[in-house]
Image 1 (tube, helix red, strand yellow):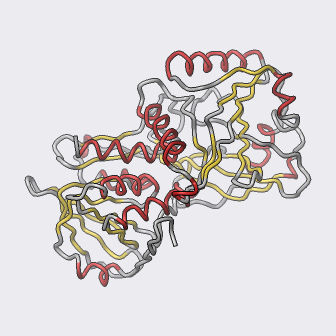
Image 2 (spheres, one colour):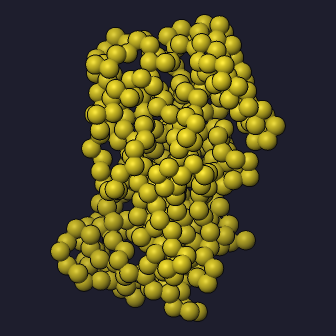
Image 3 (cartoon, rainbow, N blue to C red):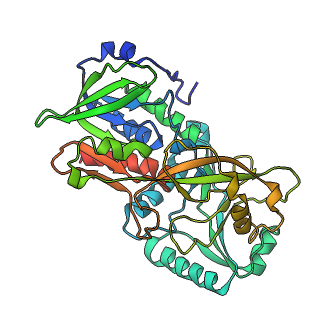
Length: 401
């Protein structure tokens, strides 16, 4: 049972399910049952006049990026002021802390804090710049700590120069958040249909959209058409394919698949840590570096690293990256050797930046010109989980302001 006392219905066989929906009219159709799609659907379902349906091709919610990540509640330190990533991350973090009471909602989180650790004078200067950016431009709470003071608080973390302390960083159980959002949708009579793969989209001027859907788990090519006034593409790793079913060729965008491998300690007895530990972000700007995270039981995990892959379903962890991960980890956690690490999982992020592209890429969230009612979301990578609740409200405001 979920926090609202509703039963989560896992339905397969789309032709059987859609007999009662055939030619039905919906106000809003969501494509994608990850945390962002669920957050948008939950917000839209709160408007009584809306009739909301969410289509998820897998057999349950959040099977891709939403359940293959570090589950960090990001503070909003890194992103350019005024960007959607900055705005929605900071807002989303605050919604979690202010409104997602674990007892009342069943959403489990810990405000554990995070350190970014500088080991050289150069890295220390980077942290100084980040400190002033947070204080002067972002309004994010941070403080600088000397190596001496830091190592009194976390005696097993090596700090040669300084630490930027982020007290509003935390961790969250993403599955409990998604179950909570699913319960909201169901409580407001929204529909969530699994095994529903969108294979065709048509825009009909003045009359909304037709969404062609087939059963993802059968060999049948039979399609069921859903008629909808408004359409939201929150398909995550597959969002560019959905987008390109509608947009003309000159406006099409491509997402790239950035795989991050995770590593754990393969035996016990290693010193514990009570917060997240990050290195200073690499110069290439493509990731935040291989960091130390903890779960809800304070068990240590390292990652993710970064490698571009061709397939959005290549979740087999790459053990060949252990030595590179070790070299990064030992700078701040010197107790580990390469033989102590085991590759245990991976996640794939949908990036708008191609390999080698160092330009900042913001979240792409907009109502597409010439396609009224079509809200397109691409490149929803980190901090997508933290931002999800704010994204839900942002998209709702597009329709209801």
